[in-house]
Length: 269
Image (tube, one colour):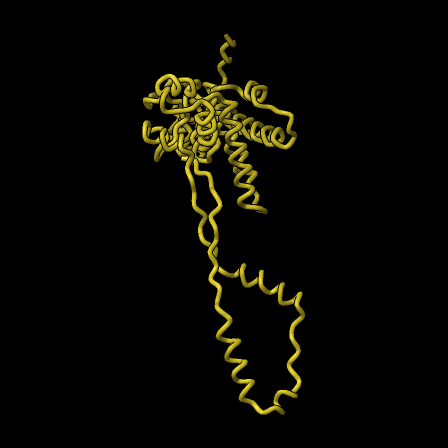
């Protein structure tokens, strides 16, 4: 469930200074007057003393901030623990209206809208969408697939958050590979997927083009293997794999996919 952090007052311990000051005053009264004429050690400038205080405060361990959950999210967890509890699943489109109709006395419209927005923007929910899980109704039944463009945008948002948490780390290869998997899982050809998700952002479009290019290279390798098999004169895929020292099961699956990709795509409805 999405938590919204709320600031908590920090309690800092302050060591009393009265006892130390009293002891120094008592000691000075017992010393001879000659000692009073001795030059005092130079004191640090006031600005330097003030600069030292923030450093000392920064070194002290900071208490954890309390987290407060939106009341409507708490209610959603009570009513639907399988959807808003330990596991997050993509919600069906129109779930907002479903909740209002089923629980008119439990939710205020504006509060429910805010709560669902927090839930849908949480990292755990975005991970479920990016994984391509189906959308579910309130009873936990899968009702419809997540649109490819929604999967794509969830992947981009998760990448943006990881970059913020790991500055300086090159996460681009992971993003390219994940988009490539999303393209294959969408069931669309590369051109149709690109038309669907391409945006005005040049950087994300460049990553998309890189993923599509990698998929094209993989498809070309599969086609080359199929042609090599056909030209070998071997009737057995297992025999062909042994001839080149390759895994027989991997060769068989690759050839099967290459044959499928040779078939013309069905016309759009």
